[in-house]
Image (cartoon, rainbow, N blue to C red):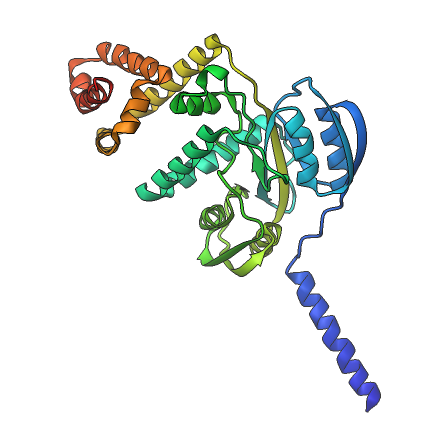
Amino acid sequence: MAKASHLLVVAWCLMILAAAAAIAQPAELPGVNINATDISLEQFLGKVSAQTGVETYLAEDPGIEVSVDLVDADIETAIHTAAEQANCSWVRIYVLESLERPAEEEDFGTLARLVAGTRGQYFRRMTREEREALAAEVAAMAQSGSNAQDEAPIGGWRASAISEEAQDGGLDRSAQWAMSDPLRFATSPSYSDPASLQIADADVAAFSDALADASGFVVLDRLQATEGQIDIDLTEVAVDEIVAAAAEQLGCSWRRVYLLAHVRKLSNEEIEQRMDTLFNASMGYFWSQPQERRAEVIQRIVDGSNQLTEEQRVQIRSSEIARKMMQRFMNHSNALSMEQRRELTPLLQAAAKIMGG
């Protein structure tokens, strides 16, 4: 009888172990141990990946050497230690993909474009109120210009290369940051890890949106197409665990990945060039939309301008970048057909009201 009881206990333990394995709990990452003086950021990241098994992608080596003394450091503490010295923004993202990883070579540019696309879809699925709240959060962070903190940040960090001339101009400060940081579309204002997530019968897009809401992290869907449904009810657990649970239900693999990009001060000529690029891309996209969609965009902008406070109007009028963008808009409008100018009349009137005081 004692032997039978012993076998039952063993069987029960095996069942528990099997269940735990089926959940695919993510393994704890090894600590980073690097003591080096004056090594390139690229070399440093290679050592981090070799010790942790986590991939890192650098936009371009800034040519800045870093010095570190890390003993059993958390991977994000390690990355931030070097990124801060090299003035690099960095971000953690997740990738869902088939069990047989695609053979094509990945690089920073490819992943950054995928992240920008994913973030864009996330924004488009937001309600107007949600978009406005997020925009306010991003603007407040960009204008604060304060990255100092006692501990390494979680999930990502925005480096700054704002010029001294923009210190007093909140809008110019935000605009320069947006133009200088290659990861501006990838990072979130804040991250939460651990996080809580409760979803049922969700596809990958719904899961990605829910995780972004709950934690700030971006999930790249590289599965091409899947009909799997995700059910998750997890409270205050590691984000790795949440992504692993979703991957297990989808029957796919997942990776944690880091992107890094050097942020430098732009020259006046570079700012002008990027303003031109941004304006031309924006107007090109606007005119590519159906007329009904263009009317919705115009009405939303006009409604937003009517809600500006006097303080916000003063900030816009005092912004050099805002004045230059307005001049671009006027030049663009003057080159349009009469019918197109009539379509833009509400925008022109709203702009004149703001800029005219």
